[in-house]
Length: 398
Image 1 (spheres, helix red, strand yellow):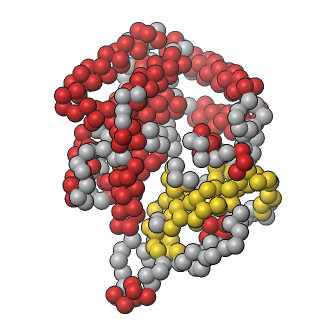
Image 2 (image 1 turned 60 degrees about the vertical axis):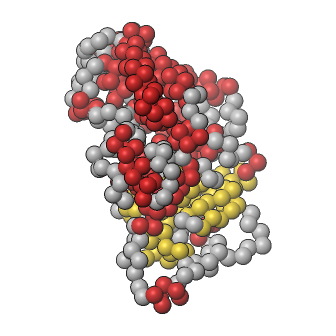
Image 3 (image 1 turned 90 degrees about the horizontal axis):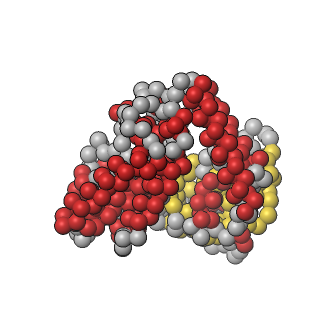
């Protein structure tokens, strides 16, 4: 399994370049048909390789070795308990794991929207769908991850996505906003609710089950909000801000606080050996950024740029050419530059921020193109907070 995992990582880093989209360059928008076709062929070839690997290795055992690295998102269930070919396949494939969680994201939003009158029927619909997929896709009812099971992978993906789309079509308002929210943000909001003490720590990451709904309703009631049990965009922003503020202790005398009032302290969270701060990009997604005063510009990984492009918040006209950057080890790299319409850290919103395009496996960095827009900024190591001064007046934000 280790050799296969290392091989998979190398393939992820190489196939896009082979199709004419280097990892350190923005993809052409719209994506040409030739690139799409190349990606399709690369995926089909990779699936064939993995299937043959499974045959050579005698299939992938249904044990704890199925668990993917912690960076994998999904599925909505415990893979250590997976025994049926369908669940084993979902656990073994990162794409299907993520899709399963997005599938359940739509299901639980609809489950809350229909209320007690419609929940029994919806649950029956879900159970019938799960039971129908193996027959529809030619999956056996028992056994391990054989070549036959892997051949059903694309069929399972299509079936799950179609069902998810059917559920999304029934959603409105806050339920729809919650169901289409990026999984990373949905998981972060769940953790915020847990950190504030409104939801149990035992929740499955990203699954908004009845226990999660109860926590949302309790939080909404405590804050004087309508008890919908749903996290629409307005409530999500309020929860995110509250959790961020609650992480920073209120230290110092009343006089000191009054003197420091122009500054805003934004809680940072541990990210490995360093700390990161939540940053909302173009009002679309929120990611954890490492504060790096040595970086000339904000750095955005290529896959995040693709997500922003698909969301319509980055357009071809936002790209402004290339820049050669000097890295910490003294080496240089050429990268595309573009303009982010806004970056929000805490309550501070900075517009027209220059950013550089990083590789897919790069880490988001909050560099000088953002930090220099303030009269001062400091890292408060005692409170683990980024303290921002007042915004500077600039004559030309581009």
